[in-house]
Amino acid sequence: MLRLYIANKNYSSWSLRPWVLMRQLGIEFEEMLVPFGDPGQPSPFHAFSPSGKVPCLVDGDTVVWESLAIAEYLAEREARVWPADRLARAWARCAAAEMHAGFSELRNVCPMSCGVRVRIDTAPAGLARDVARLDELWCEGLSRFGGEFLAGGAFTAVDAFFAPVAFRVQSYALALSAPASDYVARLLALAPMQAWYAAALEETWRDEAHEAEAHSTGVLLADLRRSAGA
Image 1 (cartoon, rainbow, N blue to C red):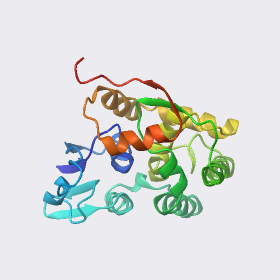
Image 2 (cartoon, helix red, strand yellow; image 1 turned 30 degrees about the vertical axis):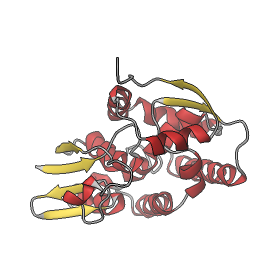
Image 3 (cartoon, one colour; image 1 turned 180 degrees about the horizontal axis):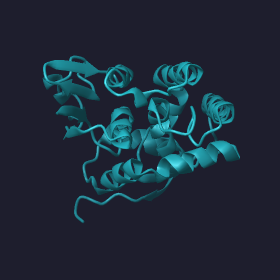
């Protein structure tokens, strides 16, 4: 069976991508959750991942790292990973690649932390540009392909690549147009997304660096996670 190595669900946006893709498409795998290591210590991910990062997919003696490479590897065995239509598939790959390599301000200013709610009083210009581009891209896909998801009526890899952004929108109350907001709501309502979120709230492990990043963005309004002593 496929084994997917991931890190803590509250923080690990990269891990979420292949995880939600496989869960939503019904691709069976064994989840291998390895917590982030302590600062200054060697990465615990080097034991299974050549890059020392997650996610990492293991299929027998084949090791696939990087979320985009994992999606393409899965597509070789499951056609539903990408849209069936050639034009939709090309667009979906472009959008996923843009997410994979871009939106740095969104990542830096609004790191994924599923269980917190933060108010951003003054958004940096770079974040505003990233959110505007995100809205534009999502609305293009929804309008052009006429479905509930970005490249048509079915959830595909491009939606998985933006799944972590849905949690960011929820955590930081990012302002979007009505079509983009509705799309976020659809992503958050998916059963695998609900399962990931519930597990994230149950995690009591905290990483100081991740916590500091999330709290530095604005005013912490709520922390919905279970505390270590609960």
